[in-house]
Image (cartoon, rainbow, N blue to C red):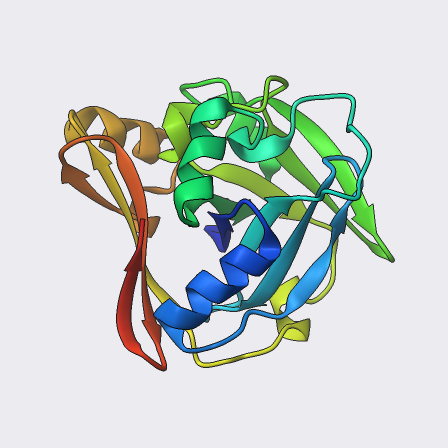
Length: 211
């Protein structure tokens, strides 16, 4: 399998709030992206180096109820409270060329595989039915795109690059073992401490950490 970081999401109560917060942190305005009709969310996106992208993700106030739990824990009260206070690290997503093998070999339940489409591109993504994030977001979601250029190639490059995904866990050896089983331990740095997710970036404002 070839696994690499595909994108990472910053959760925000509104896209405007997320754009303003990241403009202060990074020195750039993340452009508007699109809507996810199946989840009633929308986003802002930009390149983050190495064919990956940064995403600001928010519930779309103009969309109808999706009829299911939204992805990435956006319906959970704890998540809503946290990102209302300030936008923050929500989840990371790993791109793979063999999603079925990832699921078969996973030590934890990654959720169902949901099919998405926008224009002529389709993708498959792991989404737990109840919307939770495996290990509270310390384990990634997995995505498999249909053939074609990575979506980031059509996004703006504003000089922001992801340098590290930082996973903090009270039992780092346990988390590392799960990452190795998923063949993604090379994609993140694991530290000991209270469970948390953070992204380290280089930006026009210099090094930045978003947690």
